[in-house]
Length: 181
Image (cartoon, rainbow, N blue to C red; front, side, top):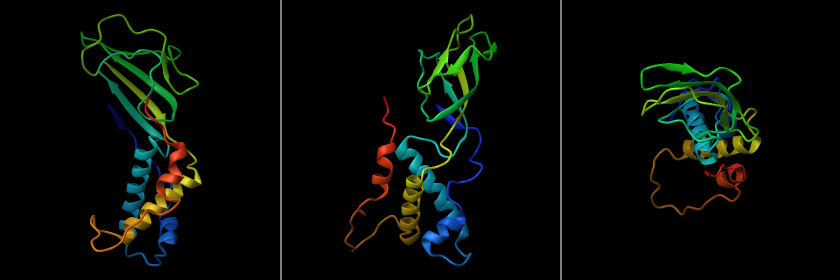
């Protein structure tokens, strides 16, 4: 399980960039456009399997993993801390230098603490992950989603012929997609 510890400091697209794409010149829909920017970022993250922009995450595991451990989120830029929780209630913060980030972005731990790990939430790893700067193609994919959602505010479109835009969302993102191992 992983969870976001800090929200993004800012979105990859500004309100002004999104409004320019939408050709919106007033401020009436600023709240809606702001929500669409966040939703588009989240959709791109889910499709790519990558986090954007950079921020802190906490990964909680029920047992000590085999090494190297591949993180469920990428790209991990830094491993801030590794904390082990033992069955007797002891909390052990691994010392710097006993864990590291490998060249491929996996976690390496030299040795685990003495004692039996508890059988749930045995390990917490705090990392910084995300892509900064965000590539132009990813931003364009976000703009395509924002434009579509702004224009079509309902979940069902009845009575219209639909087609996928050539060179659309998936084409912009597919080359950078992370495929789970």
